[in-house]
Amino acid sequence: MSQKYDPDILASEITTESVYQSRRRLLRAGLGSPLLLLAGCGPRDADAGASPIVTTSAKDSPDGFRTSESQTRFEDASSYNNFYEFGTGKADPARYAGSLRPSPWRVDIAGEAEVTGRFNLEDLLKGVAPQERIYRMRCVEGWSMVIPWLGLPLGDVLRKFKPTSRAKYVAFTSLADPRQMPGVSYDVLDWPYREGLRIDEAMHPLTLLATGMYGRALPNQNGAPLRLVVPWKYGFKGIKSIVKIEFTQKMPPTAWNVSAPEEYGFYSNVNPSVDHPRWSQKTERRISGTASKLFAERIETRPFNGYAAQVASMYSGMDLRKWF
Ligand code: MTE
Image 1 (cartoon, rainbow, N blue to C red):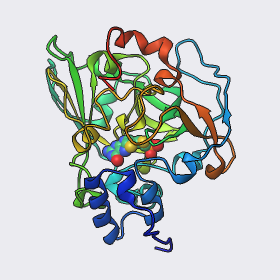
Image 2 (image 1 turned 90 degrees about the vertical axis):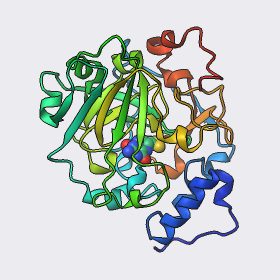
Image 3 (image 1 turned 60 degrees about the vertical axis):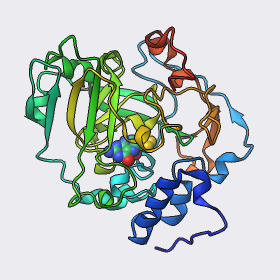
Image 4 (image 1 turned 45 degrees about the vertical axis):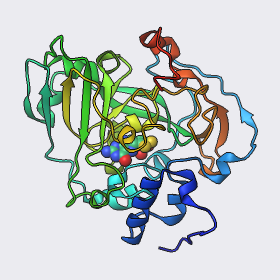
């Protein structure tokens, strides 16, 4: 590892103690680049600066399926990732995810549905037409991208399994195989990575089960062969390499909420007026176009990541400070 570790910056200042300690273990094992690791789950030093805020003129299709905002380059979207099963540095997933075997792939469908069982990926997706969606993606750490996804509306896939009236939530689980994923041997998170949505969120037409991006299959580091994409929520809701989908009556536990409940709630809707306990969520660094990541422009973050017209009604009457 050629990068230098700067002992003057306490990583524990920008991440939770347990995650920090686990990252140190990862680091000692050679997984996780020290410099990027300090950037970890929190804004980088550069992000804290007072760079000018640029206002973008958002042009979205009325359904929100496509934005005309400048797209992130494939090279950036596939080399600056969070996928802790392969290390905590942003460059680690691209470097180490070659060991993931996305085919053949099976997904367990379980819980409150008439049809359950283990399905080959092809059978799981059969009968639902893939679509292209161009979405803004906002990471909780303060950067954002615009990505052309290929995928299927999650609701269309879920309906095939006939969820019962007791299905109030949908829980998702990632693969956690230490033979393919070196990072799961370290307790940086409570493996397997888990996420969840309320059933109406899961059925919302914007919610995508992605199988590709930029017109090709998902790169391993982006969550091959199957991941969730929920454009009005922070990026960590977008669980990668899904092996289980379960319909539940109760709100399911989620990886980041279990790890740091005071920092990451279940809903995690993008909300510029609710700060993360350790940093503001008012602006974001948009990684798009040909500009280097270091010079990404700072723009204002919008409620529900700019998808309020499509999704805000699902949360009417809820106190979004409490249900962050
Ligand atoms: N899914 C799994 N299984 N493991 C992870 O570490 N990281 C999440 C999410 N899904 C993560 C995951 C986080 S924090 C983000 S921001 C997005 O994936 C990043 O997706 P990207 O690398 O495709 O941009």
